[in-house]
Image 1 (cartoon, rainbow, N blue to C red):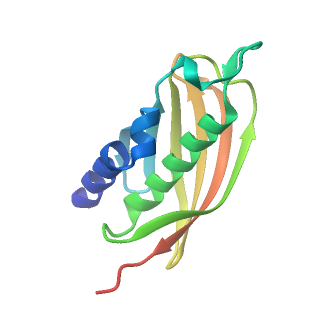
Image 2 (image 1 turned 120 degrees about the horizontal axis):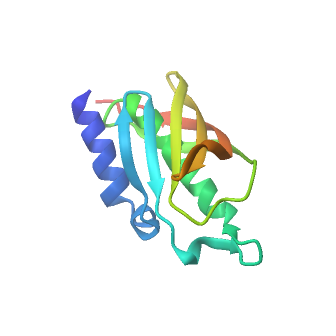
Image 3 (image 1 turned 45 degrees about the vertical axis):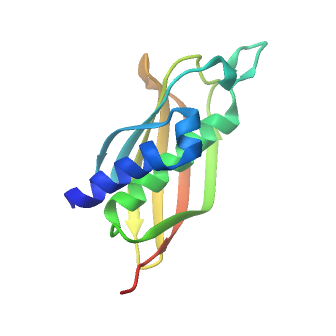
Length: 142
């Protein structure tokens, strides 16, 4: 299991160009759970009048973290891709580092299901958004 955790961490942090562009970082990962961080940048403001984080950036954090949680419980050679994603925005995203925790609900032969929660770093009890994800798991066949 240690090998898959190391592979997921390296892949998410270093090998996905869009993750690197956003500055996404896996802060913690274990089998069936991932915590991912999105650093604050002014470029991520979606509503300058409020101001608040852009919903697309928050959705990306949720989706990526959910995928990491699925992959952490799969085989290292399996491929994981998003099939369905639901994001519920509960309040405006604060202008600070955001933290997402994803938990694996179920991993079957072809599908993984996760739940995700996003908070700001300064107030981990104040939920900004929640998500539910369904991910296709393509099993590697020798």
